[in-house]
Length: 237
Image 1 (cartoon, rainbow, N blue to C red):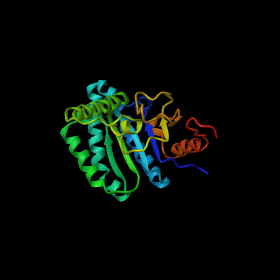
Image 2: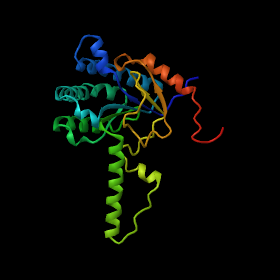
Image 3: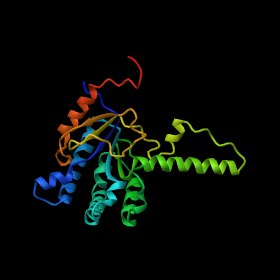
Image 4: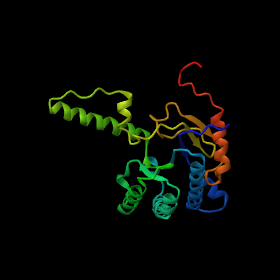
């Protein structure tokens, strides 16, 4: 029997290598990767996975060639607009998480509109991690707590003690369960500054399959591997 995790997160890797094998530019691989996102979301809906998050663009990705970055942002914009009906038809809630200050106004407006339109949906939540960095997330959480503590002090109040649970509420992923399963494609075996706090007890699954080739069959294999893990959380069973 396959155990269905509550939250699956995916580091989508290998678009560029896939494109080169086809004799195409890197952006061609990114476009094909969108089809994998669609297939994985359909699978998540079918299986009742409550949260599916995807690492779409890291903070470090801004250092890529400008042509590729611009192409990725345009692809993201078109994808957001194209999937509106699909999300509503499948009761999918859409969210974007990350440091969004560098995004264009057009893309931000499209993101906020789709988030508002799907806010009442109760099925799978698709979380796009965009301009995201695990270290940035921890630093901004610490800064938010420090600002609140300073404000309390200036008002003559005692700052609330900082616990792990309270700190998690300052992260950009507040309200989203920590991932049960992280999948990374393309054979790389690292988490690349992704959800460093949230993945303390996440199960990792690495596959050599390049992201544009990762579809429902590969997703099912990852879930089967997850089902065979013994999650003890430091305890003895």
